[in-house]
Image 1 (tube, rainbow, N blue to C red):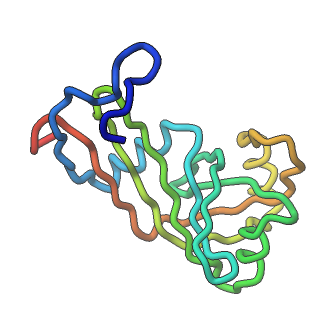
Image 2 (image 1 turned 60 degrees about the horizontal axis):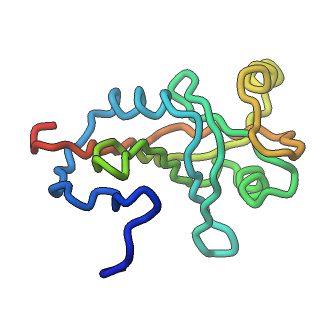
Length: 156
């Protein structure tokens, strides 16, 4: 908000930082960055409208894996579609003071994991962050991967 007082500490994030350049990321680099952070945002359709939920994830074998609970809208949507349901998954790491960082979006089909061996593997390595019974596992195959790095120069 123009004219607003700086936050506690006296520094407005990015207040004196010049604009940054958006540098596209290659698929491999985008997936590497995504694998290096513990959480992101799943974007799916619920009642014909976009819905966004923060979730923790793992990237295993080029697949984004998340855990969901019984009443989750994504659980119902993924289970009700034979081919899965189209979703986007976004994660980022952007410093608000320096305005440097990156953002990655994976778009693909979310499908429930039903193979007992895969379920056991994913449950062993992916611990939910919320205090709820996360009995379902959803895998997202990244058909489209886009990403950008916020850099000081156009070349990154």
